[in-house]
Image (spheres, rainbow, N blue to C red):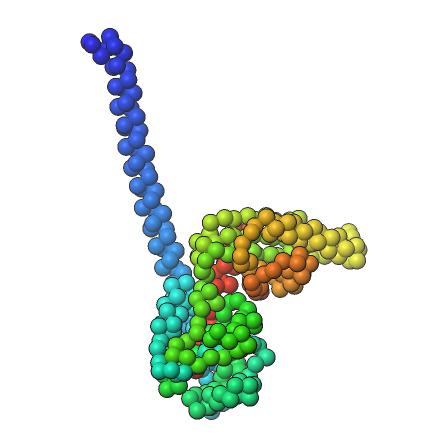
Length: 317
């Protein structure tokens, strides 16, 4: 009676209703969290399975390239495409490797480099360690080469970033160093720190800002660009002029979008000709470019491009 007189009864009823609503929302949140966790686990399992299948395909393709009629051709012992946690694990093993002084060789090799060049420039003869298998290095360039003087480790890694200007061992002029460990930098092979990765096609733009492998910002759009020309209607020449103008407008939109983001490292991937044109005409300083085959809508295409870019080809010599 007193509660009714003081107007507290309705308040208590409202509190009870809110508590019940809170319990329902909490149960709903817990169910949704569990569903998302299950979905993330299923996706991770699927990605690991895809990785294993791609690794096996790459290994078989590598073996096929080197097998001749007698089956005696020189071939890498193993070839594997690495990404994600598997790549981090392999890089961790290599960086933790220790030898005596000047027992571990690290070399950054361009696509034009060869074992003979390494021998001529540095007086390093890898035949002493790898024997005839040193010839396999030429097929792996551009790459990072890691070899120890006992021949226990002999691998090449094809990094996603361009290492042409990298110097090793504190020597600004050297791309080769002998120390007691492999002079690998995680940022050469793994998504570390803050950076942006942009996917550019003739009709699509997608950009993600990342902290390591987690996307923290996103922007994407598609532009109306004519497809392949078909007979009838526009003449071929007029059609191509219109299409070229549409692509130019699209690349201008891409340049403006990129200018809105201030990040230390920018990677641009996608259709090779489109990427090269964008980088050249925009004057942007990029940390690396790559051709990737990422189709579909902007956001899922960006996920595919990011996954493809941060993939490293490992060869065990």
